[in-house]
Amino acid sequence: YDVHLKVVTQTGCTDSISYQKLIKVVSSPKVKIQGDTAVCLNGSLQFNAIHLNPDTSAVNGHWNFGNVQQYNVQNPPTQTFTSAGNFLIESKLTNSSGCYNIDTLLLQVHDLPKVSAGNDVIICRGASHTLNATGAATYTWSGNIASLSNFNMANPVAKPLTTVTYYVKGTSIYQCEAMDSITVQVQQPLKTNVIKGDTLCLGQSAKIKATGSENYQWYPSLYIDKANSAE
Image 1 (cartoon, rainbow, N blue to C red):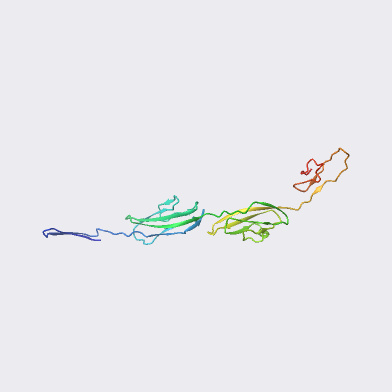
Image 2: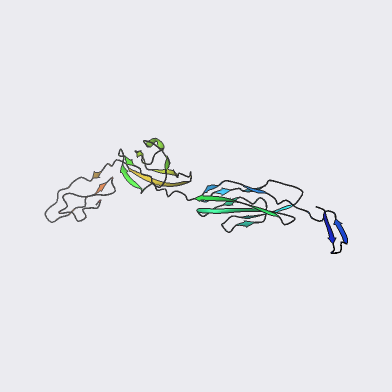
């Protein structure tokens, strides 16, 4: 802008001076944050500062992610969020004349679901066990799903023929995921053998032995020194 100054004294004397383009009015840069407003814990997001009114002025960027991370660039590197909560993200663009503009975005970092598949169990071959996953909104099971009554529910019935580990993926209402597992150990049918009996005289003893199982209980146990041993 041109500036003109005119001075008039009390007696009517005048003088004036003009300056060509003395005042320059520079537009402030307008910035808009481009990026998602929600992410799961440990998730990564990319944010960009969109310069809405670019001109010939050079601009410098500054970011504050509300989690100690700050960058003096227009477009920062990918951000990974390791704490759940709400974070106010701020992007600032400053031109060469010192004019600036700030945009903010509220980011929600959702915690992961506390998924539990339950404790490991032991069943006999031919028996079944009802699984019971907790901690999420929806569930998907994997690992020999042919032995499950349904692999898209919290509590399917498992009837495996051999020992198997089932994995469950739980998804929260915010689409955050976590996994857990449970092992169903299957005891196969046993064939127990006992050595042939013998005839003893009064006061004598003999060793008897059983095979084919893991645990034993002898009956009657009155004259047995180790009623819970194989021999």
